[in-house]
Length: 155
Length: 92
Image (tube, rainbow over all chains, first blue to last red; front, side, top):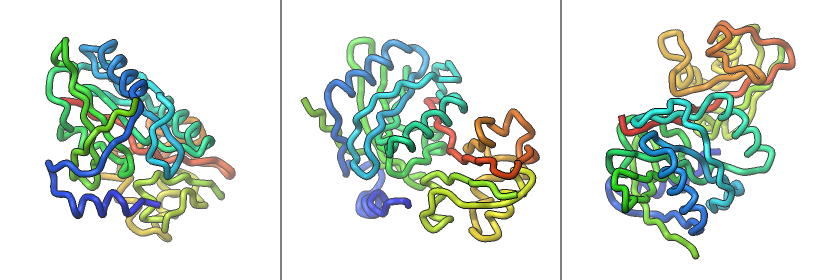
């Protein structure tokens, strides 16, 4: 069932305003950034799975970018099937779906929005355009509406 | 020709929240049409201009139907059909 939570949140929360929050453990956030740096200048992508209904990201699953491109990412379709079967078997959902932008800001592009189809996921974007400092931001993307949320890193 | 079709979260609004539905048909398109007859609106989310929508992956058992005939791919009794939204995007 599609949760009403995200929709309600969006109703209260106009685009480009920060509402909601992603709480994520430091080590998981670090894994995402390390993956993004490792694959730069290509985009990196993956999932942090967590128990269904928990909204808690727990299991880091880096995915191969089948497009191997600096401007596009796509999970390989066979890998995607395996991933979802595994998550279903473990009663998990993709709590976080992450990817990197390697030359632009960490904000969802039109392409990102058109593909986004997990209304309950936190879409994390990391920008690696600056070699010294990364951007790490999180969004809900529901029915084509982008809502940025706060990121709380838990030590 | 009964097959089990697993429905992704985003499309469960069309199936009353059900994660999977039973359907029949000899091809992917027939199965989709059969589901559509009970859950109106689903087909438009999967099929565009008589082709599978590019945002959606459909598998018969382990096979992505894009590589095995698309909507005309054969479906047999007892097969499992999985619908998954593609996970893709990027700065482009």
